Image (cartoon, rainbow, N blue to C red):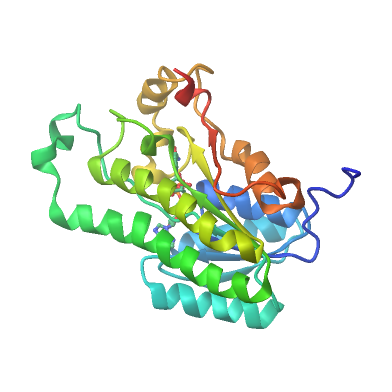
Length: 263
Ligand SMILES: NC(=O)c1ccc[n+]([C@@H]2O[C@H](COP(=O)([O-])OP(=O)(O)OC[C@H]3O[C@@H](n4cnc5c(N)ncnc54)[C@H](O)[C@@H]3O)[C@@H](O)[C@H]2O)c1
C-alpha cells in the first residue's frame, strides 16, 4: 500500500454544521483545501456570508445553507438537497454546538442557577441536533454503503470541568457514547463514525469569551502545552477522519486538546 493520495478528498462531498465560525469553519476550509465540494450548514446568516466570502477569496466555491441544527426537518431537507445536487454525501460533520455558560465554581454556574430553558436549549443543539445530524447522514450513507461522520465532542465530556456549564458537560459526555453506539450500527455498511474531542480553542463560542485574555490564560493554565488552540489546529484530525487515512477507524474519540486529558 502506498500512502500517496491517502488524504485526498477530490470528488467527495462534505456537509458541516456550524461551519460559519471557529472549528466548523476550519474543518470546512480544510476539506475544500483537499479537494472536496463543501456545504456549510449554519444558523447565523452573517457568519455564513463571511465564511463563504473567506473561502471564495481563497478560490474555493462552496455552498451555504441556513440551517438550525436543532431542527431535524431542516437538517434533513439540507442533506437531501446536498445529496441531490452533488450525487453523494461522503463526509458529514455534526459540529454545531453552544456553550451552557460559566462552570460550577462561579457564583452563577452552580446547580441551583441552571435555568430550565437554557438546559433545554443546550440539549436541543448539542445532543438532539447531533443525533439528528448523525441519523440523517446514516440514512444516506447506509444506502450508498460508504461515508464518514465526524462529531465535535469535547474534553468536557470525559471528566468534571470547572470551566463549563452543566448542560455542556452532560451533552458532550452523551455524544461520546452516541458515537460508539452508532459505530456498531453503521460499520457493516462501511460507514465510519468518529469524534474529535477538542480542548479549549480560540473561537467565538460563549459570546467570544475564549478570545478574552483572562479566559484564555485561565484555560491555558489547565493544559500541558500551556496555551489554547488555534482553530487551524483541528484540521489534521478532521482530515484524518474524513479521508482514506482512517480506513480502519470507527467509534474512536480523538482528543485535540493541548494534553488536557493527559493529566
Ligand atoms: N472552542 C472550544 O474551546 C471548544 C472546545 C471543545 C468543543 N468545542 C465544540 O466545537 C463546536 C464548534 O464550536 P466553536 O468553538 O467553533 O464555536 P463558534 O461559536 O465559533 O462556532 C459555532 C458556529 O455554530 C453556529 N451554530 C450555533 N448553533 C447552531 C445551530 N443550532 N445550527 C447551526 N449552526 C449553529 C454558530 O452560529 C457558529 O457559527 C461546538 O460543538 C463546541 O461545543 C469547542
